[in-house]
Image (cartoon, rainbow, N blue to C red; front, side, top):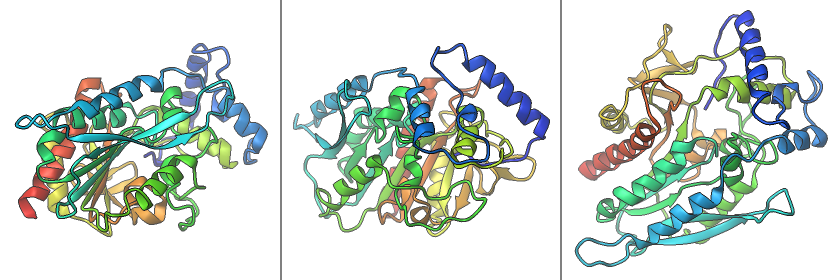
Length: 361
């Protein structure tokens, strides 16, 4: 969830130069996206194809599928009854005809009761954000059985498997899935979080919600699990500039710590406080910068920024009508956090969110 933020142009130049030199050794076919195409001209099909074909596969989605499949074995401690179904809600074709398609999975409460509040958790909308995927799976493995007493639970742990395998923000077509849930949303010139074209990833999830989950008239809560990484600045912001044919935007300051993104049309301030208080038991909360902001946005309370309506921006967190909705942001590159803490922070946020809802409903 990156946002332009001011640094001196000379610092931007040296940061980019250092990154290009460093990444050139990672893989022989790798090309830094800022070098693709003609400066000032948006990418066409050839440039998008070049970008896609030079993104190296670095890990296997099949390992995630194995983890997800195992979740169907979770049992009630009292009755030994299986609590969750694993549902394949879609399939994404692979751009390489020699590769198998990507099956898309959701984990769903087996005994769904429409009298209970319904909770939706998504991870891996940006496939490169590891704790979004692993945090969602860890929650189901360790906490979901308890909360299934109070809620119907639906979890989509890895919405963008191609991005997961290649550790990329975009999908294989060079589109940001977390801007693609409302392609008809308003575009505001100069804003970094404008909606983008629909993607197969977002279309599959929307179809699932509208068809197989159509019996849910009102969602209570939706937590979309994300990370803010150093590569947001070193790779993905320059990539977006190159793709869109824009002049180089100014580099941003990555917050060191956990924070939340609040929809200003549904503030739920006490709920956000409960989540931040739960996460601080696991990892540190991102401090505001010298201007009282995080990623260029005003802080509404400690560790929380407010942005315009998430539905209009095409964000996944706006895909349901849940009044309790947020995007989490973990900082995995912090010297003060381990990968395990990042996963635990995602779980702690979900726990804080659900405990608060139980206390007020």
